[in-house]
Image (cartoon, rainbow over all chains, first blue to last red; front, side, top):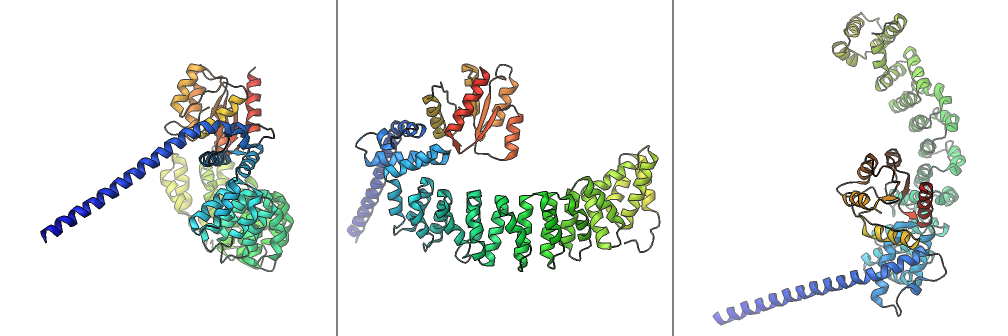
Length: 411
Length: 118
């Protein structure tokens, strides 16, 4: 028994020592390879950079040592991948040509058929950086990969390759929100920018409602003027989600000429459309919409009133004057929203400061204004100022106004 | 050429060198300020995102030192927010380019700044 135990311990020790030796040898070998690669890279890198910087007809292999070893090819490819992230324009086109000349594009296309999903995902990502049109068809096929990560990297790669043939399948992905994260596809298409607009407009009518909602959002974020006629038409669509998103997109594009179309959307039967139109009017700064925004302050839905009020506040002096005039409105909701926005925009503070003005007309106007605010039960900030304001005269006047008996039915 | 990324330094160094420019490379702000004092370059190409001392700090230091105030600075950065561009130009940068960049455009801008300097 004793001899058996000793043998077992010796055997286990020998196995562990063997494993440790193997791991150490592997690490040493890997570090040696990496060191050689780094040294080799310093020799090859200037040649690759020289190729990228020149404008002649010679291809990358003409700049590299011949015959090109597998290691040199791998290192040149790594240098090109770094350069691909760094440059655009003509230099970027030369990087793509170099990947093609080295056979890297072909190799990564083969990698898309690997049994291991992470190799397929890595190949898709590389193909995106390589930017070769040759990869479009295999990448489109990879959009149907069973692994989600491979699909999304293939989609990103198509966004980087660009050209209508690569953008079309991405737009098509918007039609299948169960299989695709609409947000991620949208991000990719927004990254493509104006080049994606033509395909988005062409596909719009063929997409389901969710896909059309995403498309409107993308068009707004790209700030496509080409999309304006479609967006304006969609404000009259029968589906409220589409009308709301079209209003939002027009707000993102931000042309004050949209004021009339958006003001009309403030009368939509669905409140989310009215609320989004009000918000969009705030973004575009359309002064022509001030009367419509004042009307929207009377809306029965809080979101519509809040967005309309904010829009008026953002419109500058004219919007501020409109909010002040709404303190006399016959609608309680409108008066309350107007005073909330005037407080938010520190307009009430300006009037409080006017209480200390030597100009009697000015201080009297401030008293009249603040009486209206107090009549709307907006006491809190004014009460605080009646204690904390730096000028004693202002504190005293405020205190007096706050303690005056209020007329009944003021709110 | 000031950039903490060695590949960017070598890439742009090679580009400018191949067009006849004498290029000095610096990997961080401190080294850059020391080298600028020593070699008095005709132009500083400056990255913004760097450890220890970022590009804005380096720019600020260059523009507040009477000995280096007149040296033109071009920012070359991945940061493309409007406020970064405005801040860089307000601090005294002569130009601002975003990465990824066009090599032809970079060369044209460098040439223009140096021509202006005579």
